[in-house]
Length: 141
Image (tube, rainbow, N blue to C red):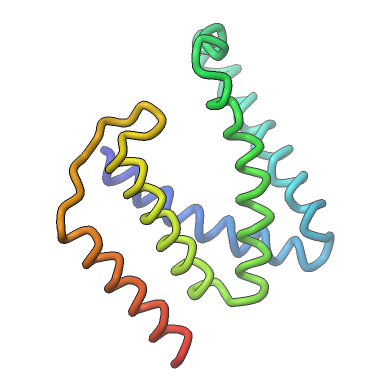
């Protein structure tokens, strides 16, 4: 199920990024960012109304910094639209993925934010170098 959800996330992130960029060209990037999050809030509220709100009572039992996810979402949506608008969907997505992998590798390697520490093996930096080479080839060609 984890693989299925990761595939769905990848597909919908790409789709959302292009939709947001097209909308942003007409209404503006900050306006689009607000529309995207308002729409997401409405959908999440509708789902919660159906499945229940039982977990909400535990929201303040976590480290307060973990509540910044929504604020990060604003930066993400705005930045993705800008990146795609300036670089195109494929190149921007490639750079976004490279950055995600670098960040995730650091989080895993050092056990940041309560994650289980996963040792760094030689294959991970080699994989990142292959992706970096792909980005450079993508940009040149």
